[in-house]
Each structure stands twice: as C-alpha cells, then as structure tokens.
Image 1 (cartoon, rainbow, N blue to C red):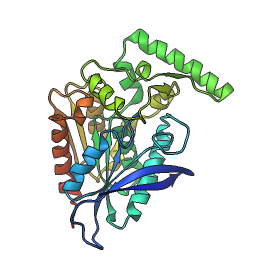
Image 2 (cartoon, rainbow, N blue to C red):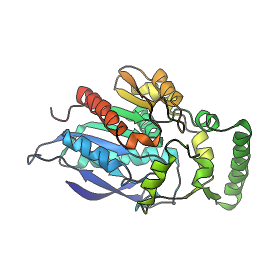
Image 3 (tube, one colour):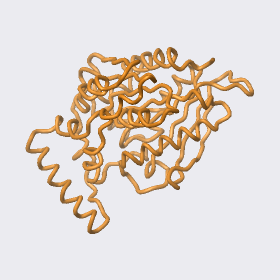
Image 4 (cartoon, one colour):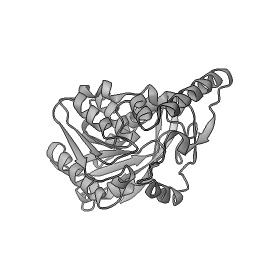
Length: 296
C-alpha cells in the first residue's frame, strides 16, 4: 500500500510516498528503508520497483523528492549536495514517526548520486543503521574528470569559474543541457532516456553550478565514520558513466562491516532493469536481512 506524505526540510515542504508491506498487523512495526534517488531522478522514476521488492521482503519503505524536484518546494533543479544531506536527515525523522516504522531500525538505500548522499549521511547520522550505495560517487572531481578528455575537463572548469563569478554578482546560474554535464554513455543512455520520456518531472536542463557542487562533495573522505554500522557498495565492471573505481574507493575508505559487489556486464542505467535489477535487489536484501531484518 502506498500513501502520499509531506514533510519539511530547512523550511521547505517536500513530497514523499510511504509504502507498507501486505499483512502488517495493527500496532506492528517493521524495519524501514529510505530510498534516495540520483541527481536528476525523482521518487517516481525507478524507485517504486525498489520499494516493491523491499515491501515483499517485509520492510516499510519511503521515497521522496529533494528540494526543487518533483512536487517538492525549493529552487528548481539544483543539486546542493549538503542540502540534500539535510533532506535525507529530515526524511529519516519523518519516517521514524510513521506508526509502522521502528524508529531504531532505519536503513538507507541510494543510487547513483544518491549513493554518494547516503554514504555521507551514514557517516554523520547514527540513526542510519544499515546503508546500501549503488553505483555511487566517492570523489566528485575524480569522477567528472575521468569521464572526459583533458581538454573537455579544463573547458568545463573554465565554464564553472565564469558561472561562479556570475552567481556571485547576479545570483543566477546558467542553465545548460543536461547532457553537457552528465555525459550520456552510449551503452545504456537510451534506457535512461526512455524512462525519462515517460516521466513529466524529468528535466532536460540543469544549472552550471552543479560542477562546483560536485567538485566539493567527496563522501570517501568521511565514509569511514559509518563503521561499526554496515555498508554495502554495488557497482559494475561495465559502468561507463560512474566508473567502478568510485565504489571501489568508497569501499577502500569504509570500515567494517562492509562489502563490495561488482556486477558483470552492466551499464549505469541497467541497474534499474532486468536482469541486473534482480541482482542488485538480491544483494541488497541479503545485506539488510543480515544486519537489519524486517522483523525482530
């Protein structure tokens, strides 16, 4: 069962959905998982499939849109990674208030940029009892530079500098085509494009300030503070958009208990479709059931 909810982060109203498993008895509480999408994703893109898998395993699940995305309030289409961290923390607080959720057993699941976000939140918020990061980013500058030629990277940094100066003098960031910053990989970009075509909340332009935001956000610096709480990283040897070294470095800097799962032959967006979606969820459920069982 799904119900629409609203909550607040930094004074802005955010929209979310709470999914409850079948067979839940009156007064019964279960472990709960908060699902966090990537940069230009929204709660209704991909994540309902994850919610169903987790519901089927007995978990209460919540999805939501960050500030400025979907129907949530806030400046449109921004990344603002540290503000997103605060959104996740506010969502955790709200999820813990739900009558079906055990406030002491909340897990985080993040995909793509959300994998970076949950790695950061897990490091700074002890309420996150078990974390899963799927095809996430560990170091913003390394990631953005590695998927570009050297001259392309330098050009992007020059554009970013000009935009930074414009933001300081005008308060505005230049909007650019999404593909100029988030380079489409030929391998699985059509999968993403097809999914986005069917979602009216998907955006085609994003602010140039994304570059500064991303260069200054490096979860691998603090991911070690999650320990002794568990974190699972899932990546792919064929991800050409977020290279597997991002998850590998997050894993290297994390403490125990930790695990790294490497999918074979899977592109970045292919983690959302079969056959790889089932592989992602199998590893995820194994991890949660070991460290965060749905029922006590």
